[in-house]
Length: 314
Image 1 (cartoon, one colour):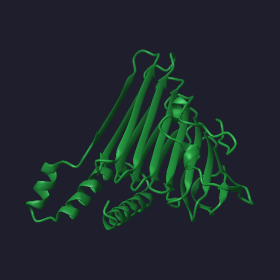
Image 2: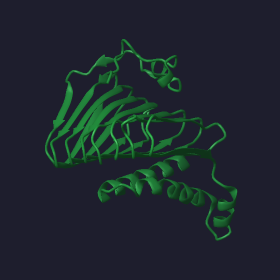
Image 3: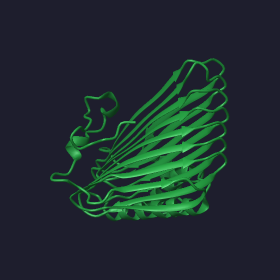
Image 4: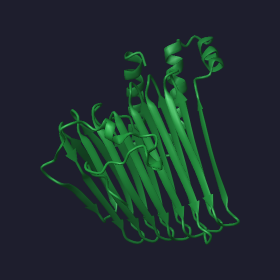
């Protein structure tokens, strides 16, 4: 996994970055934060981490999670801050045999910030990784995840919600690599995009020749709330094995007029009807989270975003 640096930023000339112009979004005059931010977790249980950014600084959080065989961990991360800064995150996760990690990320950075996360996840036999990301902050964000499934019966479930408005840009890029058979993965992402915001989903599944009986699924759905909102989707399957179950799908659309009319005919005001439709659209993703408390936090964040979007006319 290659870490990003201010002196060597990728550009849209690179295929994996063709939708996201990181140099253009970068605030001027950034300096390195005075203290390194490094956390290593090796024990099970429940952990919560708050990463905070400050105006004018480059923050480089580095998270390492290394769980031995059979360890079970629930991890909640929050990203927030004030002003214009770059939160440049590196995440390294290794799960031993039968280990389980429930990992929930809340990206709620400042509206003037840039957020990038480069994550590499490795799963041994029987390991289970459940990862969810809520992305509603930062003027530009990119969540890049590379997964290597190296043991049979291992499973990786990735899901997320993007809530974008104004001129925000949110990019989710995933490389799911099945190296052995009898393993499973699922990618399920939904985006709600208002105003002139832009969302990106690039999801790739690669199944090696030895990975027979792989079950890999991928789905991206986007709801556009204005004629100027944009969603770019690039799903990919690269399969070299026989006897596999692999699928991908993507949809982009607007709120249906029939659904709005139906709800308004029953006395629900248009604004409220739109909010209920959006909540229903997103609940299917949030409802798959196995941690009830984290799911409630996501539901609250969705309600707050809808209220703010309505107040701003989005």
